[in-house]
Length: 240
View (cartoon, rainbow, N blue to C red):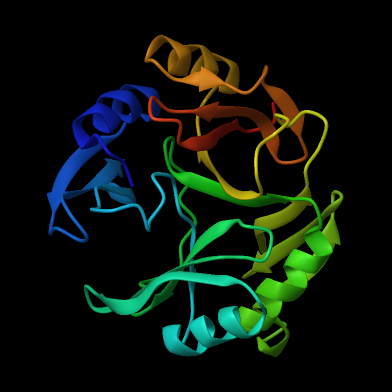
């Protein structure tokens, strides 16, 4: 979500190689970000301040209402919804530490991993207590009740890691020394780029900023960035 949709396109288009396709209005004007012929993200505007101007990670669920009830029952915040949204239902919430996330009930489409520059390839919760966070999200989205052949949760590379169909897809990690001080808990979205160091320099040229130099992680070389409006995200390039 952004205050300036045109400005966001001018920033992310050159940085991540995105083209943009007009889409039906959601909570306001909305476009799909497209790379390699695939829609990989959405950018839109919304009235009011209930939805943060930021990248939001959505978790699929069988019932948005049941997940919303579980959020409230566990002392977290339900900010918006659930409400009708396209062919499904959506809600926005914040976990007990304050990290914002989305809840999505509806058609999920075919499962796929997008091996494309500019596609989101990793999400990671940066939080003071990843174990407490894992208990919260596990209870809200019933992680323990899933088919262990298709979905499991494990400890890997000093993180609580979610795996789906044999692939690590997300993690919950304690804030580390490389991370910028003073940032509140948040879900960090990482987009694939050929070279994280070059992407960092290009983001600065386009009016964004970097949270320190790029660094090596177990999943590739990472640069943590913010866009022109302060929206946080990261880019990651594969290990050489």
